[in-house]
Image (cartoon, rainbow, N blue to C red; front, side):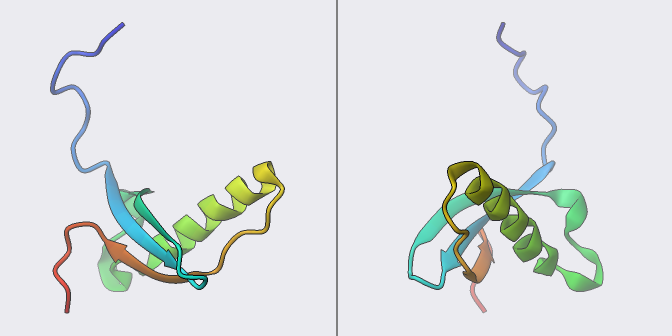
Length: 78
């Protein structure tokens, strides 16, 4: 059954583009917003994405890739 428009909470997740050491990229990785902000800013996102990658690697039987950088989608470059 379809949901009514406007029933999904906005701002529940932040999206990140991830670049791995081997040069591959993944776009729009979701991280819960409650992990972000405060003094650490977006730094907890890297750990959350690494945890997601580890779970995916366990299920697929392949080793997880090492993350080179994490960038918030839509953020202005410094």
